[in-house]
Length: 208
Image (cartoon, rainbow, N blue to C red):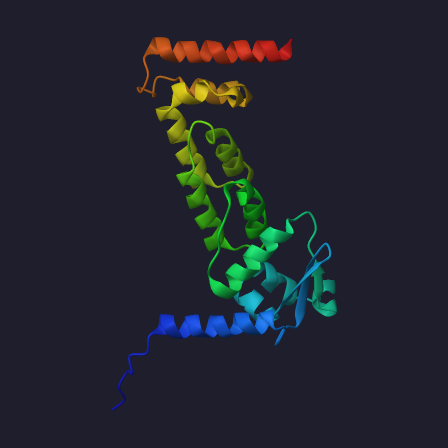
C-alpha cells in the first residue's frame, strides 16, 4: 500500500521557480530573447508559454519571432517588461503608483491576468478625490469593469470632494448627470444642483 509522503507542494514549487530564475539570470536554458530598445531579456520559451497565452500564440505557429528566436516589443516601457518577466519566473512583483499604467499595459499585452488583477487591486487602494480621475481613466482604457464600478461608487460617495478638483471639468456631462441623479442620496438636491451648474459653467468656459 502506497502512502503519501506529505511533501509541501508550495515549498517544492518555490524551490523549482528559484532554480529556474537563477538559470535565467545566468542565461542557462534560455532559447528566446525579448528585446525592448537596446535591452535584451533572455528567457525560456516553455516557461513563457506556461505563464502567458500571448507567448502560446507566438510559439505555437510558424511566426517570424518563433523562427528567429527574438521578439522586439515596441511602445512598451522596458522597466515594466522586466517586472512582468520577473513576475513570470518568481510570482512576485512590486509597483509604483506613477508607473502603474505602463505596467498594466505590458501585463495586459502579455495576458498576465493575475498580475492585471493585482494592479487593479493596488489602484483601488489609492483612490482619493485627487487620484479618482486618473484611476477611472485607467479603468476605462483597459476595460477593467470591476475597477470602473469601484470608481463610480467612490464618485457617488465623494461627489463634493471630487467636484472641487481641477480635473472635474474633464468629466463628461453625462457622467456628472448620473452622479447628481435621484439615485444618489448622499447629497441634498441643492448640493447636487450646485455641482451640476458648476460643471456646466466649466464646460461653457472651456468652449469660449
